[in-house]
Image (cartoon, rainbow, N blue to C red; front, side):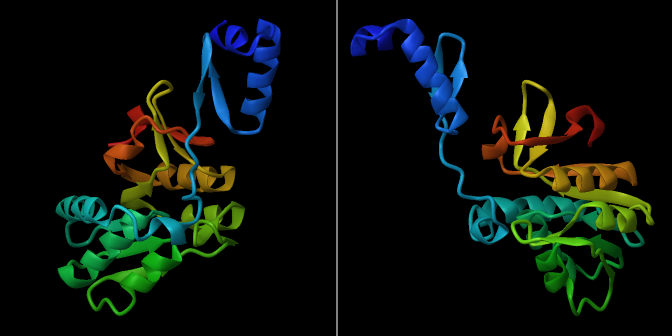
Length: 206
């Protein structure tokens, strides 16, 4: 009503304009109004890697405290897992590390203590890793003591973790199905942030 009065048009005209703006990704309609959508330029791993590194490094240190010699772990597509891999390489822990992310593989290369298994499949440039049916088939061959998964956002209203693409979501679901314990890695800024595809109920992770 405020907008229709301000621009001297009908309420129906405003509703149609808001619907069009929502369809174009410019806003999200809410009851009685609308919210501006902030641009998200972080769809590519290459854009996310240099950001929020101190927080990611603190998370990585907490991950190491959860591990013990002999564990088989999965490091999912996550820029925080790159920091985990860097710490693992110098930790002296003897693990089996499975990953589908190129940067994690490169960070772990040359680790004399751990065994590294790299999952292939369909390459996703945005993720810098392998997702989809072929990757899922390989992931399902193993059992993981612990899995550490990346998160785009926590949808608190629905109680779910989200990611950008359905292919990444199904791959994350496969990892969860084959892990005894599963953990989500995220900075506080992602709490309440929404994204396209939900991949787990928050009650199903540790």
